[in-house]
Length: 167
Image (tube, rainbow, N blue to C red; front, top):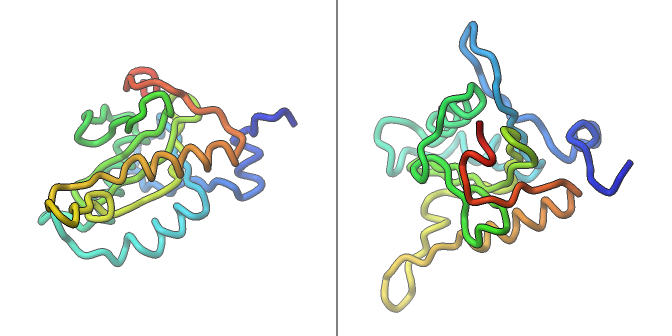
């Protein structure tokens, strides 16, 4: 094996897991979505128990399932509402967003996203102790995601452009 791990090898080793997305009859996947074991633990054990918070219509689980389904089935995602690259842009770390949840990870290649970390909106928007202004912790999640990508031995598409990672 070369120093760059392949997706098949990472799947075989259990270092990434395909994120299950329920498709309607006749829908076919156009994009690939994986998660690290730590992400999958959060996705399977924490997300289903989260109550509605900012989104009054959907539970956090349902909203994230819908976003992942849109991604996998090839729906164009709204930037920056549903997806955006976080700074520094040269790191290639992206954030999938619902009203209540944030999912951080990277594109290993066009249309192939690996989720590394998840958090609630509140966990990523911490108020400053003195001023009350929101402190964003995105750079912390970005650094963690970049570290996971390095540990996996994968490639990261480092671009701030949606069209460079999603077709």
